[in-house]
Image: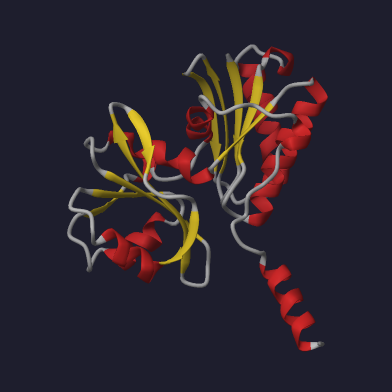
Length: 233
């Protein structure tokens, strides 16, 4: 099975192609350009360099959230467009589960703490561990305050490895509270499309119309609109 995967949940963007669980090619960019300008051209170039056409792909996988509202929308919209155009199924995966694969290098039993900056002293977070080379989820995806996360992590005696674009923020908050916490190496820290490929394994594909983003909480614009509506009542 050949999967084309897209990741645009934060500042960086990446595209990967896997075949039967093996990585064929990956492109990563953190140039500051908007994903609307980079993501699809990256996918087109990667397919060309791999000697493939979109018709050769069996499914398109995408990190559907949580993450940047704009980035998630761009990624999901791009996946929908590719699927509709080529009549292919889509696979939406958790951004946090995809990035957890970055912690595979850690000793078995380590806690993989996935963190994305959610602003307002919060992170999008989920906890995982590896058992027999398989990823095991310890909690659901959530938006949680750094203080609450610190209290929860105190229960673990195993090494805690932090990954994700919010890893440095999280590590700086936790490092003076927990002796067993470490920051993943920079090259293994950011979410990437290869992780999306791996998280897509075993997930039931859906139609492009059924693929939807997952935000976990309302955007700032939506929160402000609701606050204004309450004030005007």
